[in-house]
Length: 349
Figure 1 (cartoon, one colour):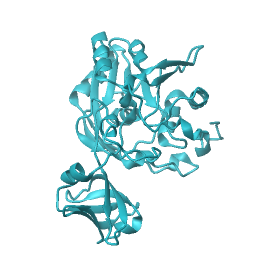
Figure 2 (cartoon, one colour; figure 1 turned 60 degrees about the vertical axis):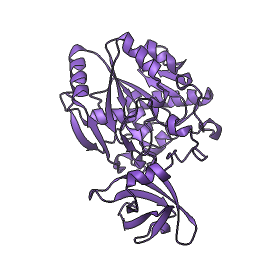
Figure 3 (cartoon, one colour; figure 1 turned 135 degrees about the vertical axis):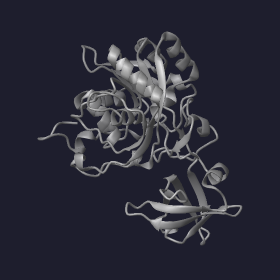
Figure 4 (cartoon, one colour; figure 1 turned 90 degrees about the vertical axis):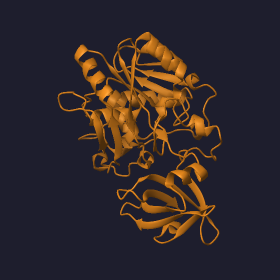
């Protein structure tokens, strides 16, 4: 991660990661994950704690913002007319309210007019191939929600090299997940337990939630060396009135906002105006946060370790400073932290 003339390039956000550091399963205890503390100033930039120690890091009166979205069982395995298998990921309802935007493999199984049989008379029919390669599909013989409930599986990330188990249905959700809307978990929140949240509240930390529906684009690698030209995917978010009021009052009183995950950062920063006021309401964001971005809403960031060359790593680099983030990732690899969705966490303060 070294600067190029005129800014940063894609190669500046690359790093080497031994394959055995990619966590394939969660730890037995959520708060037992390791926590790398990354300080943006001071003589001791890095220190190693466990996630339960977060209780000692967040002062009373600060605001902790969580993403309460729930992951849908959106991965569907079916059979083509040839008898061979096909896999479909239902991403979100299409604008017509009757079909869904989806991804699938093999692509030939999702040609317009073709069906994938799920069982018991339920199938998926491809209506249209969209310009970006997504498909628009219709669920036949059931509602989409019923099809997912009956046939769906947890859509584990592609770097988890195994089939989901019954345990994943609980562990690939945050303990505070509410309304279904995402195809991936807001993974920084996976480390929290109800007991830790209760302890933070008892200490005087204010906790409030928002929704950002995590889409499949979160796993899409950046392909352009000119990172500013990367076409950022859009995601729907909702800022409740309570959160907007709390954030604005906290800012007036000089308190700090702690974001649990990059999804919270993108939602809050998208909803904040030039004066630093957070606006309540629902909207979509395609905000691409790169080094040089001036943060207006978020003061502290709790996050997992991200894929090389990803927009999530770029966001973390923008928040901490690219060289600071490079040193943090090098330290995490050397100290054999566990990486990605089921891995360990860092907090940038």
